[in-house]
Structure formats: structure tokens, C-alpha cells
Length: 249
Image 1 (cartoon, helix red, strand yellow):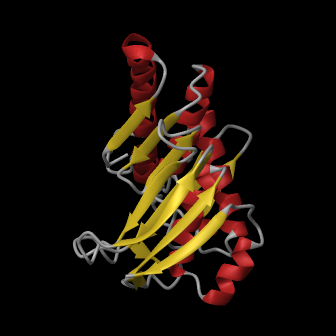
Image 2 (cartoon, rainbow, N blue to C red; image 1 turned 135 degrees about the vertical axis):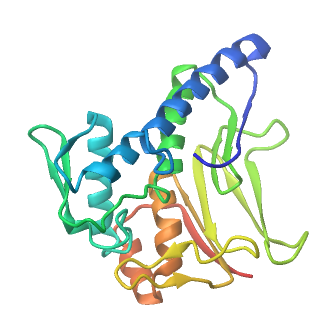
């Protein structure tokens, strides 16, 4: 997923925790081989190289992900666009799970989706292993809190200002829910692009979304970074989330 991954498992003991960790690690390796656009041998990498030349058959899971991304595109008024240009030029064929690009300029980037999807898969794994209390984090930006912290009723997450060392902008309590945070930092900016115009966002702000659906949270935190105030209101009407917060930095 291109970032640090941390997980805290409670009440399982070292031996069982290691079994659970290995199960999750193998799942993350599998997802990376499917969704990592920077790996030319991944499914999405092969798709980006070949789909303009001829239809590329993908696995059922990736095909469903692409279908979901089209639904998110509609629900966000086009502001979530994994093509960053024109999703209408991506053709999905349900008959054989093939994907075609109608333009050589099209390539797919699941960066605003993949970590949320991975959290959802991990959550299912933890349920399978009867884990009642856990904390999962991709680089402190995509987080899942299950059950309780050992010394509290929630997993408390501090939102820190990337432009001011040690400044805490706010705190968010997580219990059986997920948090996604998008924004810019001094060393990482202009990475969020408004689809269509191609305008890069360099605002000093953080967008935090809390949702019981990690994919919703991931998609919305990025989308709402580039949406106008009116667009934000319209988009949020299409989702059920727990909270949405913008921190100016």
C-alpha cells in the first residue's frame, strides 16, 4: 500500500496474535499485487499498459472494485475519478470481466481507494479470528478502531498539524469504526488533483472522515479536499458517515 502498516491486537496471546498477523500480512501482499499501480506486474499495472491496445480480463475481485469505483464516481458528482481524466473512457464488460480504455491517456490510480478497501478486508479477517479489540493504521491516515483501548472506552486518535510540530488540532474517538485523513504537508503537497481540470490542491488543510465503512471514509476524505462548499453538501447527502471535519493548518 506504499505506507507503513501497524496493528495492535489485544487479548489473543503471542502465538495466536502471530497467526492473525501472518494471515493479514499475506492478504496485504495479495492486495498489493492486485492494486499497486507502481508495480508494472500487478493486475492494475498490466491493465494500465495494455487496456488501450485490447480488452484485458481481470479477476472478479478487481472487476467488482472497478464497478464500485464507478458508483463512487456517480455519488461524488465525478470528483472521485480513478482515471483522473475521464472515467467514461473506461469500458467494463460484465460478460467476461474485461476492461478497455478508449484513450491512450487513460491509466487507473486506486490511491484514494485501496487503503480503505484493505481496511475493510482486514476487518473481515479480524472478525473471522474473533478479535474484539484492535487498532489498525496505514501511516496514521487510514485507521480502524475495533472495540476498546485497554485504558478507555475508545481508541483515541490525535489529529496533528503537519505544518506545526507538536500542535494537536483535535482528537477523534473510534469504536468499531474507521477514520481517513487527507491533506497536504510541507514535504508532500500537490498530490490531490481535481478530476477534469487537473488542478492540484495545495491548500493547508486536513479533511477527516469517520465512517463505519472504511472505503467510504477513504473516498470521501480525498474527494472533499477538492470539493467546493456547495459540492461537499451535495456529496455528503449520498453517504451515511459518523462525522466530517476540516482542520485549517
